[in-house]
Image (cartoon, rainbow, N blue to C red; front, side):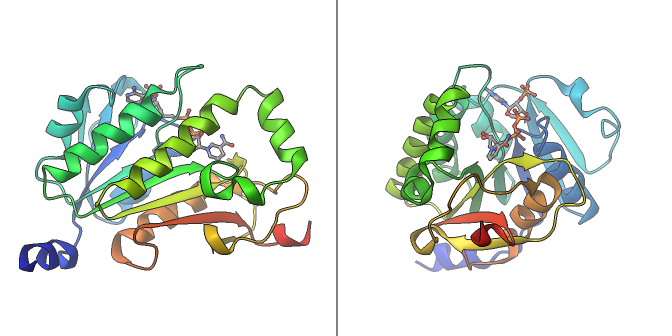
Amino acid sequence: LIKKIQIMEREIKSIVVLGGTGRTGIHVVQQALQRGLRVTTLVRDSSKLKGLLDHPELEIVKGDVTNFSDIYNAVQGNDAIISILGRIGKNNAAIIQGTENIIAAVQKSRISKTICLSSFGAGSTRSRSSWLFNLLVRVTGLRASFEAKTQQELLFYKSRIDFTLIMACRLTDDLSIKELSAYPADQLPFIHGIPKKVARTKVATFMLDQLDSRCWSRKTVCLLAEDSKEL
Ligand SMILES: NC(=O)c1ccc[n+]([C@@H]2O[C@H](COP(=O)([O-])OP(=O)(O)OC[C@H]3O[C@@H](n4cnc5c(N)ncnc54)[C@H](OP(=O)(O)O)[C@@H]3O)[C@@H](O)[C@H]2O)c1
């Protein structure tokens, strides 16, 4: 118990970013470095991190999240994981197998917190999304990915690790997008129509803010544009 409390209260100084070469992940890496964190990122192609390759606080490890040993080796000596993994084409292995590997690696390391990005409309937020949104998911070929994310949420709740699962919707690089609102998934209002877009940079900031907070520990939190409820 004492060891558990010590792990929970340890200040987070070093993180592992999974999906750091992605459109949202790159913001997580950049903002984490700006905050003075030491960052290890497990990537398949390091050339996608150009501009950051020589950063003294960034360690780039080549690997694949579907290989347990790649994740296990990357997390050793670090304090937290931020996962912004996505599917590759129609392959959802990074979501399901990646999550199984993350949980197993956390259990065998000193990682005290795991923060993961998922999608609004999957898992516990499914019942809050409209028929129109669900139709959009189907016609855009995202159904299998949403099913993988439903499975991912179950894996997190079945585990005993400290996680925060973030369900966001329609990410954009448009910086003019307004602030975010965070809702517990189990108290989320029904979202009519198609939710408004949220900015990737703001989602990255929210994920990093969770490193110092226990507010959303072992919870699913939904991020929506501030005025989404008015739809
Ligand atoms: N797009 C949206 O509007 C939206 C909305 C809500 C939620 N989301 C979810 O948010 C997450 C991030 O979205 P995004 O648009 O930033 O994704 P993205 O640009 O497609 O990035 C996905 C990342 O996952 C990495 N990855 C995939 N499989 C891997 C593997 N086996 N091993 C190691 N890395 C792997 C990719 O690496 P490579 O660079 O090597 O391919 C990339 O860095 C996704 O789960 C997405 O479904 C997206």
